[in-house]
Length: 155
Image (cartoon, rainbow, N blue to C red; front, top):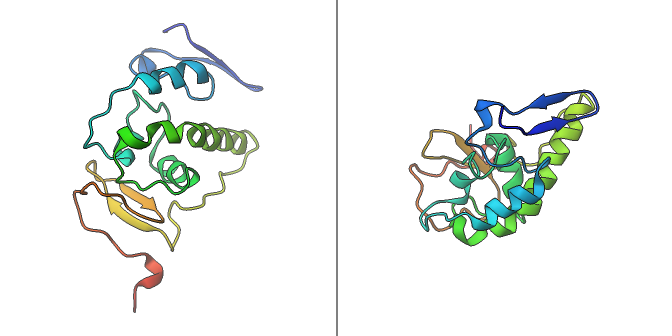
């Protein structure tokens, strides 16, 4: 165990070896997480959508949370350079993660605003995961072509 402990109303858990290389938890260790994010050096050609899945920066963020965070942060383009927009995402990360935890503890699901929505645009990232977004895509190249939203597909 790395000494970090999480406490909730119904549970106490410890971060073991699984979390040793992960960032501080954005909810439970927000000050340490914000400090690490501020000190992070991200390559200029790294898209923000890729950086959001980097567990050394964003512990606990997965594919559906990535989509919701980008949307909550004024529809940040997923292929914007991460180095340019990481500071702007901090509050959105905490807000979306907090809403997800509250929904889970209440036995509900997070109200999704863009992930798997028919109007959303999608692309495949370098890891083969689908990126869901609305608004601009950003200027960095993606590994595959843009798919049109389902609502525009003609049958």
